[in-house]
Length: 116
Image (cartoon, rainbow, N blue to C red; front, top):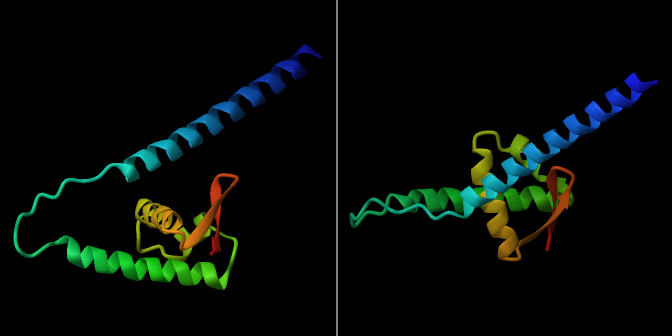
């Protein structure tokens, strides 16, 4: 009988550690996304212009996904747009939420996305 209790205790501890690690990764990702990156170019041509255009078209694509499927999980958006990195998508979705262009609601280990 003591073995069953010990097994249950080990399962609970392992589950707790896994959840804490997932939470830590999420926090680190948000901290990294919120850290501004310094610009190293001082040319008259801004290399970030093409990136900005790319970000804007990606934002439009994500907004369309949310409009077509309200409540879509952020993890599903990653699958729909595999050519972009998760961090890039996370950051842009956070910006869209801050700009009140969509609404993010925590759902498990992801966010459900809704049009505003």
